Length: 311
Image (cartoon, rainbow, N blue to C red; front, side):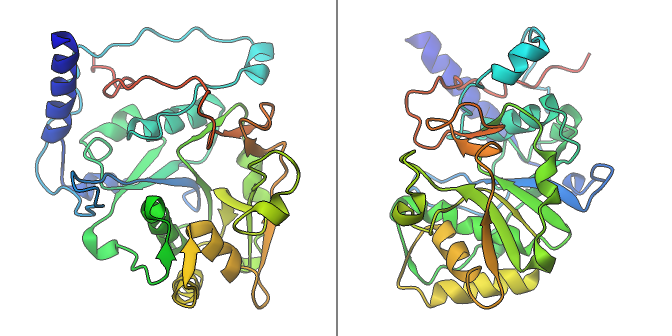
């Protein structure tokens, strides 16, 4: 029991000591900075509120408190095993999930970076991009908070903030991924989806019951925002904000996205289930969405398990 408490205390102390000025995060991206995967991780305070004030203080080097965190190299799988292996469920309740996703993208050979919008001390720590060169961390502040007008399910308050990705206009095209998604194969080809100059968006089929009736049972006409391909623009972001103001009850982000993109000349499209599907429905998809998979084997919580000390 004492050992467990010591481990928890160490993790808490390590995270409390993190935090740096965000300037270093604005480094050059991958070869093509116009395309990127994107996700978000928000930390809530003890009152269960989202505090979007990113840290702005000097922090320790990433390895200064991780000298004992060493992980043995993973055994390489044969190609036949790689194709059939179901990944362990990401640690979506912890910021480590973003590091898992960055590693996962690298493992499948993704050529585009992973952008994360966050207020997490761990993800904002100094030198994190030294260990995760395909990760681009963008701090979010209280001034960035998306103001909600429609009534939303209480547990979906963080989902609503997801809409700010539509305003990341420094990118030409983005692929949003929930942090509870794991890849079995490279899905870079989804960037080829035609977004018709921003008038169309692509998303996962929302067939949560695995019965083929997603169009009738879904909260957003069969559209799931777990994985989306879209073109960010100020017009799209403003349109989404205006749309939610007209809705009395909006449930979550995907109902707002679906309603906005199915008006005027806009349109939602669904991505093949061979590319993205719920893990409990289809374990053979290239991207497995673990939402609602309570029996799936899950990563243990280990403080920054991927970060190795500098030699």
